[in-house]
Length: 332
Image (cartoon, rainbow, N blue to C red; front, side, top):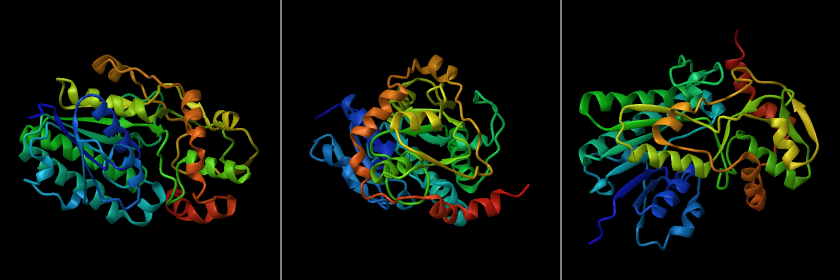
């Protein structure tokens, strides 16, 4: 009988979750993934489907209850399941609260009753709003839209379970993760998906504002490594910011991709710069960045064909898709 530790990864067919599964398998874990496959990303797990230490269950985390067999014998839980994107959260706030808050509560209860050694929550740096940079973990909380609020409330639920029930919990506030397997369909959103399809189509890149805005991009394998370290540490009840600690401008990304650009209006509620202060996670977990920005972009370019069927955005379609954003977030 194997004595390998068992890890549950919620949202494990997704972008970061699937890389988390890879990391855990490589470090001697048995991995159980639960995902509702609403985004249709089964292909993210195809390469590990035959691994005897891997198991998949299709389910919505809101349907998981204490005693669910997926958590039997589990020592670690990595909670990535939820829904993202800004505009849909403005249009469907109840769904975001249900998936990202109540979904988290269901996972917490499953983890509590399974007596897991550690649950690590995938939080969002969006909780800080228009933050001072570099942003430390003690920065004031100021979510600007329902997605940000829902992720912060999910995090608060984790620490409530830690306080009341003694569930060992840590949280990582992710800044701007990027990399292979990032979602190619759905709502207008992440800059990489928009730009890669535009590059394939030979169209100009749609640059918000003047392109000098910076984002703290961190390659996804470095994200997964941080989460494993956060699970294996003796520390509990901790929050860590996670980024590269070296913001890159949108204009720099375009330099690496090559091509023309067209400018579209700057959006309210978006920071000019996201920049994680990574001193705490570097000190506490001995975590280090391993994939520089230029290397990460090059890795994605090798995989650019996956964006062939992605939606092609232009200034007109973006204006239509983000009209709700301006309507609600443009108020003074």
